[in-house]
Image (tube, rainbow, N blue to C red; front, top):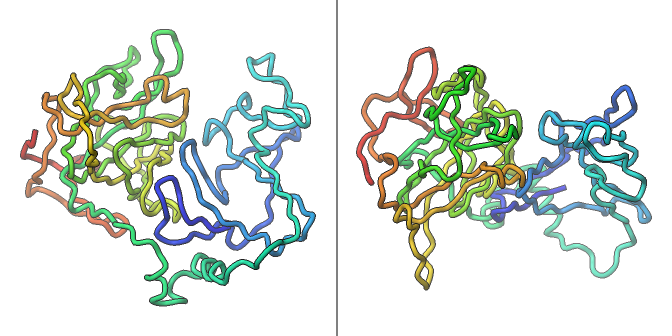
Length: 377
């Protein structure tokens, strides 16, 4: 399997999945039920992520039937038996879930699609398909300069050109009806729970905190303090993933204590993205440039800000519809927060995945965003 694109377009280089090919196996619990896996995967996709995939069936005998199978637990990554549907699954009606799934019926979130392999018809595949596989499996070094003429030319945003580094949070609490609710927030504490827990989340109708200027580049560090992976989707802009890094969730007070090294995005996450998986207990660092498109008609500004409001939100539907959204306000007139563009001289430089970030050192070995000055609103 070779991936050549995602929801934002082509990847900068074809990516070989399931390489080298390994036999798929399913683990079972003591009752003989399949267990979801988060450790190994051929292709990991969250809601709103997409993948353009080329699959080579040339060595599969005609008459074969292959199953596209999903073993990702839901909610990801821990899982809940009430949300795991497959043929012959346990009857969960006594616990508020669904009855057992009968053969040939749903719900079934594991068996997704069947491929029926038949004899080939028409012209043979072009030789370029073999070249694509060579690129994906062996890398560009084996073909040299030919890669430059074949690979898409995708711009790589530079962190050193960012005018702002924002620390934002993904949060979980309970609403007035006692239901679990997910909210976005900053690294500032607007409220404290009765048990003393710091609460960073803000309701969707709160004043915008992410006020940007068109044409500027920003780096966002988004800290997931919840127990789920959230596919965060961004309107107005596409983005690029810089890194993921674990942090101490229990001790998070707005200034992170990282508990491990940063790691680069998966190969099929390189280039532009519209939706990014943000895992529990991790800081996902992204970069984006806020280019507002030129359009041949008038678009009115937001009556509450005087700017143009766009949302970023979780693409799990129940989260999206229950306050896991926030607005990005471009070129706002009304003053909400300070957006700044000039760094101070007191900074320490650290390298992350080949990109340089400047951060002010803080106490306890923790890192705060760069100290910035120079208001541009």
